Length: 271
Ligand code: KIV
Image (tube, rainbow, N blue to C red; front, side, top):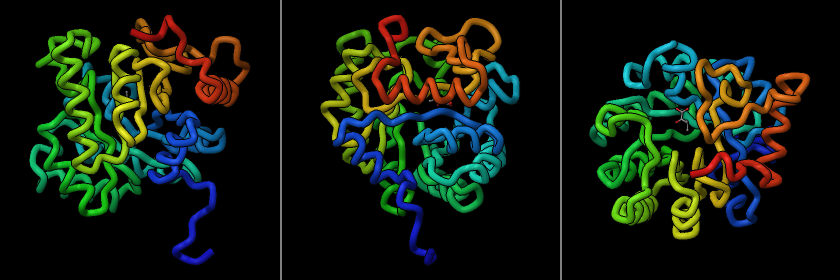
């Protein structure tokens, strides 16, 4: 294989767009180490996210705010070593993209030092210039709307976003602004299913949902949630795929099959 070739089945941002057009559901999961990354890649997960949720599920923190760029680089490097086919998406942690210049430096680090193939950042239209700076410099971006856990203190808790008509209208507008700015993918977290479906139809980029219903182009969950090992009460939108599975590999396969067949999420998982 020449240095310009990559395996024909490698997932790219272009392929995600083709999947949206073909109405083939995009399956995503988080991972934070090479062992699970290898399992997810072998099983056929399309996008593996090194989320800043690692602050909670790996580091035992109360929220994602203390997660650092060094944490993200370290875990992404570990995950990258396990991936051949899946696209590696990496979260930009809290305060790592406060200006286009800061964002370029930090996203550049994720691409150069950890093998990220797309970065994800929380925020709405105030991120327009950041998204423009990154994408015009060759860094693919997934914009994250709806519940933004890095704003937990401002929001006063982890709540569904977009129930009120004015907030829903603003989210729809912001999705368009971020698409126009060059975002390659949009992620919607904890958004009423009807609104998420409306946004998915309004934009031409792929929309991945978590707690956003079945009308989006793909689903993502936190790995620990689908394996039923999240301490405390699991979020309403997640499902324990270990129940009835005889191995971790089987649970991951059940999740992939359920998303592809559109049998997950069900009514009980949506807002
Ligand atoms: O940090 C994370 O794992 C995420 C997912 C919940 C989408 O942002």
